Length: 456
Ligand code: 4AD
Image 1 (cartoon, helix red, strand yellow):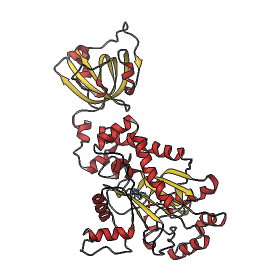
Image 2 (tube, protein in one colour; image 1 turned 60 degrees about the vertical axis):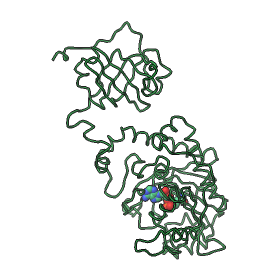
Image 3 (tube, protein in one colour; image 1 turned 90 degrees about the vertical axis):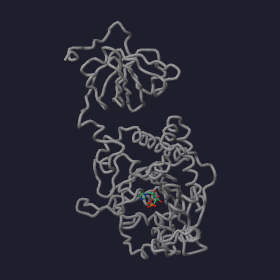
């Protein structure tokens, strides 16, 4: 009752506060500041002291409220996730005490901006780290406020910038191909189709074919665009919508392509590792992570089949893997984890790969194709050289039973100054699942889309 009467007054004799964000607290130590944010943690100590860990997206700040400041109605009813504005002075913590940034805000005045419910509707009741995964996905808009989820999303932002920096500094141009298309790239079974003004259209599976058309226009190009796959499988590494980092390079050999992939992965890791803030988030999420400096293992598909047999990795019915069949997720993961190093797996048989991949000269059974496999996740990159001869490409369409008409623009590339070229696509969520040691790619995007989930 009494608390309802207590009203805080702003002491006008104090210096005018400087509005700061938490990341700038260190350089503003010793002077009076004003900070907005969300109550990330709350601890009441006796009746005259209260600690708030404030969060504003740029960092976390411990704030201490004493005496009257914690006697008001707002103070007594304060809940996690409420928004507040706090005034006071940031000072270095004395030896032996710890808090984010090594400092603490001693509050002299504060106000509530927006309250959050307590009781049964409290955020901690709606989501906790122990809740069922389906509740976590349903409440994803609240989960992303958490320390772990927000760190993953922040690293994701830095990783995407690092990919762009990698390509930009190597002289590539970024392009933004359409997501609404009338052609397939990776087989008809995973196409999402929709009605486009009365015509059948699809959500793109890959921007590759469009990137190929950009080579004569801009030389090497890349894109960071969404790709869509109507995957029926419920696995920890398949999404219906994912961010696809794809590049295409003219006048290269298959070996050049393998080097491009290896250099890109190493360079992107080095770039994010060199940023202290990003590095500390990577270390928080994946304490054992170290950038990989040795050459990646290069292994042919045929050797992988042999490796599986030599190491007792079999089909469920106990039979051996044989040349010509796809290596599914689980044996692939078993092999990659056992070898424990990144593997550039090459020369897959034609029939299990996409129509545009050329056979090698020495062995027509296999193609100039590559997957990059990472420990813990398996495949994170798929790439290949592209059939660049017009007649050969027509033959490939015929073999696959594909109608060439919707692809007239793609086939024209082979008529008007063709060139040997190749490229690859990397799944950003899979890269992050590897870098940050996440159990599933679903944790590595903002609002995951997978079988039975298109919400929030
Ligand atoms: O191996 P994919 O299907 O290759 C292509 O789409 C080529 N056209 C790319 C190119 O050469 N430009 O897919 C490439 C990568 C995979 O290695 C994987 O990391 C990711 O895209 N990917 C998925 N990620 C999440 N969910 C899915 N359903 C994915 N399907 C592929």
